Image (cartoon, rainbow, N blue to C red; front, side, top):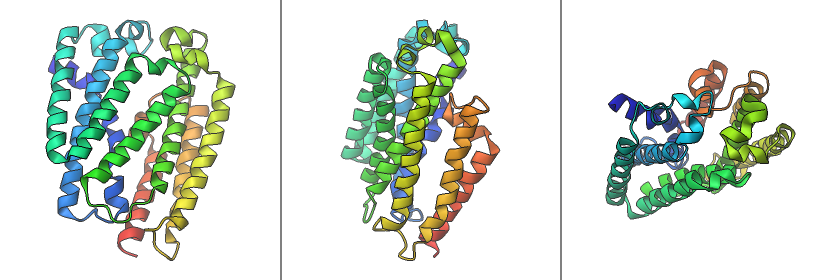
Length: 289
C-alpha cells in the first residue's frame, strides 16, 4: 500500500519544483547557507503539496483513467490503492504542508495554499477548458518561482524571470497536449475531455508562437535584467536554452514523446547535457566572473 501511495504521489513530478530555487540562484545566494536551507525546506513542502494535488486529481479522474491505455495502471485506477486511503493521505499531506509552510514564512504558506486551491479547481473543472488548462499549468510554475522569492531576502531578482518562466511553461504545456493528442488520435476526447478543444495544427501554431516568444524573452533577460553581469556574458547561455527548446520540439514531433515532460528531463541524454551546460554556465557567470 505504501509503495502504491508513493507512486500516486508521483515523485518524478517533483523535478518541476526545482523552479523554487530560481530566486536563490539568480539573486546570487546559492552559497548562503541559511537561504539555501530555507529554500530547500520550501522545495520539500512544495513537493508534498503538489503530491496531494496529484492524489486528488487521480481520485477525480479514476473512471477516465481506467479507460486510458496508460493511466489505467495508476494505483487508484488499478485498485492497488483504495479510494479511502488516498483521501486520508491527501488530507494529511495538505494539513502538514500548510502548517509547516506557515512556520517557514506566512507569505510562503499563502502561495502554497493558493497553489493548492488553484490546482484543486483545475482537477475538478478547469482542466476541461482548452487554453485555460495550459494557462493554469503555467501559473503554477510562476507561483513556484514566487514562492522561492518569499523564502529569502531578495535584493535584485529580475521580473524578467517570471515572464520567461510563464512562456516556457506554456511551451511545455502545449507540447504535452500535442503529445497526448497524437497518442490518443481519434479517441482523445473520451480519455481527456479538454483534447476536444485542440487539433494538431492548432497546437503546432501555439507551440511555434510560444517557443519563439520564450527565446526572445530569455535573450532580452540576459542583457537587460538589472542583476546580470554588465559585460553581457549571460548572453553566452542563450545557445544552450535554444538547443533545449529545439530538442524538445524534436522529441514531440519526431520521437512522439513529450506526454510527460519530466520523463524527457530524466531520460533524454542530449536534453540533460544541454541543461547541465546551461546550469554550469549560469553559475560560473553569476558567481565567478
